[in-house]
Image (cartoon, rainbow, N blue to C red):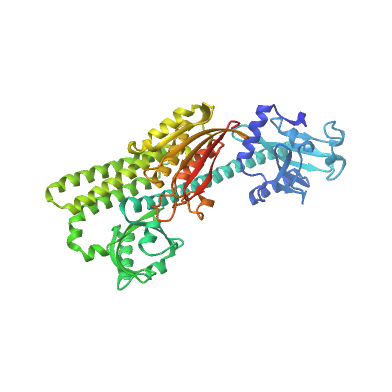
Length: 553
């Protein structure tokens, strides 16, 4: 079949252009069927085909006269010859043409004698295949028929290109919609963690409301974080449903923001007062979803005097949550921009907390100062977590291969230990039992993975115990192994099967739960290196995790 192939580079470009059409093995389409019938009628032939040539076959997008035949081997295809020339290829009598006289399509069914094929030329210049006509008797096209066949081939090429563009546009819209959904889910989680409120998204089309984990906890929903709008409205007591419907009408018609205090009865029959806030998102001038937050204000209503002193602080947090939601709703695809825009509002909020603390110094309000101190501590922890994880988020989310370089193992361990808070570094003990000095790795990502294991071990083990980093050589398979061993209580046995999955939370009974990202990020980093992380010891007296970097990788 080598004589039917273009030069290697040109053929590779042609195959790539063909596959970019996303048309191979697609079902019949009326437009292409109609063009093929026109070719058959104009040229007066019983057979007409839209033939696309890939590496091993010619596949028929449209077929007149060869019912039941979807493809033939490329080495038998007349069209494989036609795409090697610029104009119309016409074979008046295949039985006497040395290229085709012994071809099974000539000597056997469908007994081709006459063939004419016009190449399907794409905008790049690549020829995807042909529009061809076939007869079982000798003939020759008239000038009108030949010209018409070429024009119809151009129509097919344009139709294939337009079809490809529409598919690509649809895929782009779908990806953007998925990114918006992920951004909304992340927004709801951040709103709950930072502002102490729950988030929700109501889809107009499906009439379903998705609640964040924080909202599920506030409203006693358990694991039921998806609820129909009628069921959600049924939780409201008194005139709450009527007031909410009126507020939504005002929001839709006049753009007035939704901000409503209502009483509801949770699924556990607990009465509580909540504040609902939200706004519509529009598409083509009509609302498609309602995005908002829910806050338990029962204590505020019971203790108005105390909450009055905290009102300014709460409003600042709510404004910050709104600013954060607005920033994220812009749907910036660049994760480095996302990192900056998340961190900067947090810096502003931290400064606001410091300002509020200074303002309260002269009020002698010890309770408020204590709450501000705790809030500042939480804010510092949140900012540190964001600095440590979002810095590598772009690479973790990327499907492209990472760039590996010679990385000094001792330096890697040193910088990871240096990332640990200074008051805890003395607990880390490094044991080098390996002779390996360098490894092919991405320093930044491996630093993140090792740091997450160290912080996890330090967090869950007694403060007077050591966390051991042990460097080992393996012979089978040939690998460098970095062990992190702690003296903590180990992991829940129910958690271990999904230990490295995103969202897996809880290390042991009674422990403070994290956000389920640390070990998931470790797993992703190792996958990007073609490596793996394993839990090799899990006992009430401690656990050991291994980062295994095979030299072959």
